[in-house]
Picture 1 (cartoon, rainbow, N blue to C red):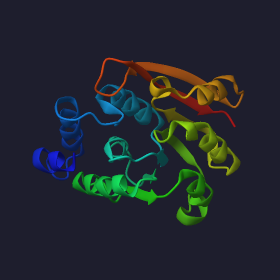
Picture 2 (picture 1 turned 180 degrees about the vertical axis):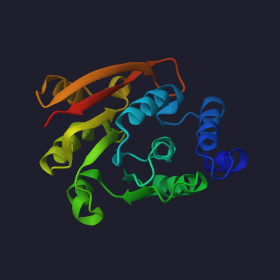
Picture 3 (picture 1 turned 120 degrees about the horizontal axis):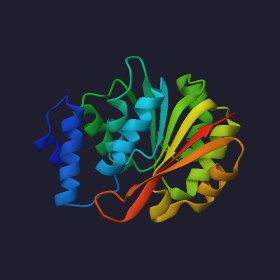
Picture 4 (picture 1 turned 45 degrees about the horizontal axis):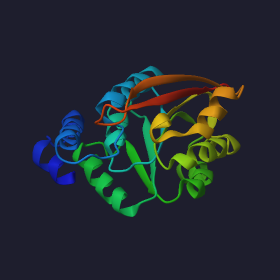
Length: 206
């Protein structure tokens, strides 16, 4: 994937990086990026929120990181968390190739260990936007951890990927039944396939 970006994308042009990855994943090798179909939903929600501080759980190879960072306003920041060092190494290069390294802080390690340290390490008071796209069994645990650490404020938008395929039933049950959230499901397709998947947008009400 990195070689495809370096060969086919224009350095410093985030959209060309996204297009190169989409083309590679549709025609060469499937990858678990959010993908182009759900990516448009991500773009729309992110533009609506216009966050000054955003958090991504699950960098993978940096595709969604680039999608998010390219839409951030000047002065806004994205912290992205990745457990796998090999994925993180590729993501750093893709983010830099897109010219977005100044907007993105990539942190390596388990999300459960890192979330309680984010405020102290990076001076972030709370997040306006959180994108969940890591281990599906961590969605609910990390959402509750973000709540407990005071990193969600009234109006914070959580957007969760892969809530149908492979699925996150416990997380969906929580955000849809909790009085602390107002949730909406966006139906789409699993990345680069025709299988149903979707994104769950949940607004934290405090």
